[in-house]
Each structure stands twice: as C-alpha cells, then as structure tokens.
Amino acid sequence: METKDYGEIPYTIEIDWINETVWLNNHVAKEKIVVTEKDSKSIENAFKLIKAKRNGLF
Image 1: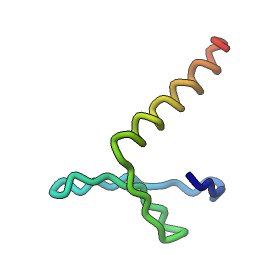
Image 2: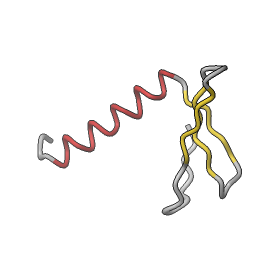
Image 3: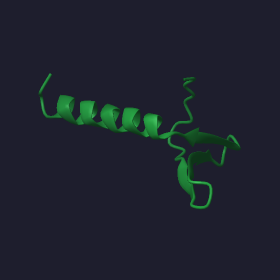
Image 4: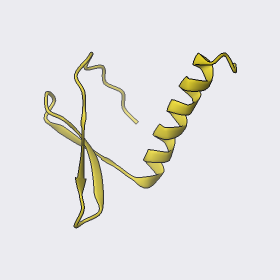
C-alpha cells in the first residue's frame, strides 16, 4: 500500500449501498481508495495497536 502525507486533510468515508462498496474519498487529491473487508480489519487492528501502546501494554 502506498503512503501519502496530506497533513491534516481528512478523508471522508463513502458507502455505496447498492453495490456494497466502501471507499475513502480525499477531496484534495481527487482520489478515492476502495476499502475491502480485509482492509477494514487491518485498519481496525492498527487502531487497536495504537490504543494498546497508548495504554502502555507494549
């Protein structure tokens, strides 16, 4: 996965209910990143690791 630093520019989460698709929309770079179910688990795990580190678990 490619990493880009846009500073404090937030992505918006968009949901296509008909096609069951989720993507992140960066209005500055005019790009949309499709998020798969597998990606969402990886993102969730990353935030769990951040929380664990913040709580001093490692």
